[in-house]
Image 1 (spheres, helix red, strand yellow):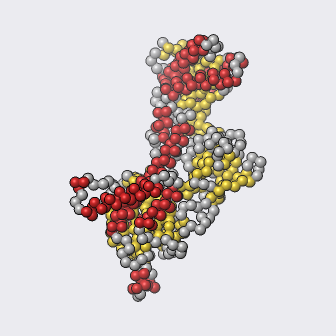
Image 2 (cartoon, one colour):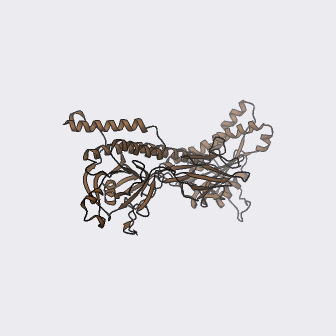
Image 3 (tube, one colour):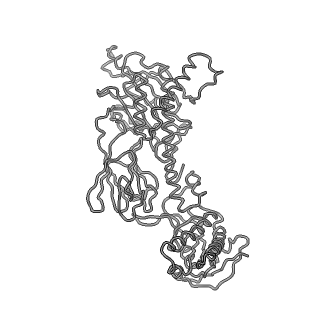
Length: 582
């Protein structure tokens, strides 16, 4: 997807790789192999130095901030930490301008992220308003209204660790078996030719049942990864295991690791060639790795002790590749067999299905958030286009050809004097509901409410070739909707609502305007000013426009010439026309 910060896909080697929580990107290389040297070893897949201590992803983190009284506060983060105005939020901010649910900090397989939760005034990081999740590194700050939060990483405690070494020079990988990725479907009864195949299908079913029973209700990704490795250790005689997932940049990153026993394990050597084959060819690989350290070249028995069996299997769900799972053992002999590789392949498919389930839940949550934010401005079909990636909205300002409409209730002050506050609110809600329904029905964008005035735009942020004709039709339908409202009010003995509307069309600036603390999408320019002035001139029931709209009048609409006016703030005269049904 594109736009609204909801993208996931990264295309590599002719297949679609899915990353966790990121944008679309990638250079076409499945592992982003850097040729920068680190001693005799190469940096690989964004790992930095080839030897890197990798812990289970339960890295602890903490937020610090000053409350409204200036007292420093601190909170250890959970997997998801909420920030908002309500008392049930993890961090409650009783500050003007903070939304009920304002922001969230989440832990994902590739680290910690902060995201805005559809707040009115936004969440800010590095001087910009967040329109998609942003990564957090130790010492990073982000702002909610006037409160600055500082993000700090803390140690992971006493959990088991291992280091992962990815290279192609110090390890000579001898591939003993390969298994192509299968769909995971069971064979029809007529295709079962022997007992071995029947057993293979039974084992798939057993693995699927076991994993579903143990892990199906787990939606915390770090815990899910740890439990996947835990189940793998129960099934296989592995000493070490690791899960590497694709990050937002399309690189493999360690997401979870496990060692058997309490002792510190030797580096976990994973061959770059095998990893590349597992990902590009969708192939499970069983190999024996012999260290080629010169000290052991003359001592065959010692060298045999250095032989390690490794199984590396891609985590694939449908067309989505999440990463790889790797297991190794330091036992002599063939501790892993070809049958083990088949079993791990089935296990990996089920694990990937669980990961895909969690990914889709997270994607759905982001989509709902995006829909909620954009649904305040755009009609439903445009929201669908943006969320589904068919249309992209970019932050910043752009020049657009658009039509602007202002609609204002005439004599609203006098009308509201005879009403209680709840009655005024009910009147405005009823009136605005009808007006916005017309705006969205004709493809317009709701810009804002200004007291009893409404501002709408056609042609921005999404270009529409017939924007002027649509806006004219909307203005006339809005007046007709007001007549319907007044007919209902008249039956209840209530005073009528009278509305004047102004229209103008031309080039304007559309984009996100405001301060660092509060920014909103809007349009500015002379076109907007003229439309506002024309609205001010319009009497009850009138639709006034500049002569710029005459070239785009829809069928069944006529323009009646009005006097030329000198509008406030403009040097020249403006030709004014009144629009009516023919």
